[in-house]
Image (cartoon, rainbow, N blue to C red; front, top):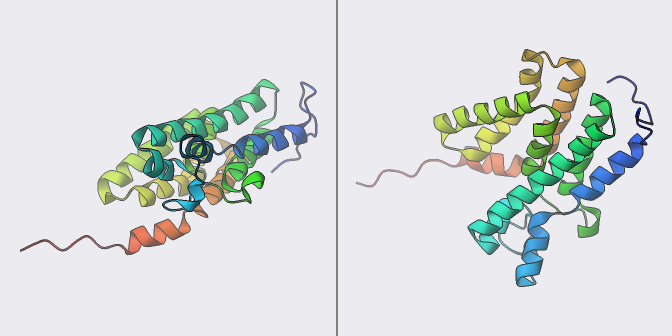
Length: 205
């Protein structure tokens, strides 16, 4: 990745933008929704994850939707803000990584957060909407073929660097996509293993 200027053309310090993105990522929507509505710690419920799926277990469909939207929004806000203050693509990439890291490992929650899928996708929509659309399309194709959502979504993320190169985004974007995929795939590793190992139920006679 090329050298990154410490100050954007607008005069905004890049390091400050990265720290602000991490702080924004630390606002785990599911955690605070569950705490507000039930007084309980979502990390002590269900899967122990702060993401939308576990929020849905605790609060129902509206909790899932609100958490998903909130986590996507903070990713979009982080990258959109970086674009407003004229960060370079590399600087925007670092902001995207920071907001995902904040979601996955929030300091105020003892570094126990979510898994980054919604936040990363919201950020990706602003960073590169074409690749974001292709990732969604690939996920849909994989899902139709496998009927396994986690495998499909993670497979699409794993292919995002290749999708970026195929659409002419260049080496810098490819490195960013690799890093984003890593931040999303790593927390999902256990889920992937479980989903891959799970066999379809035997037909009843």
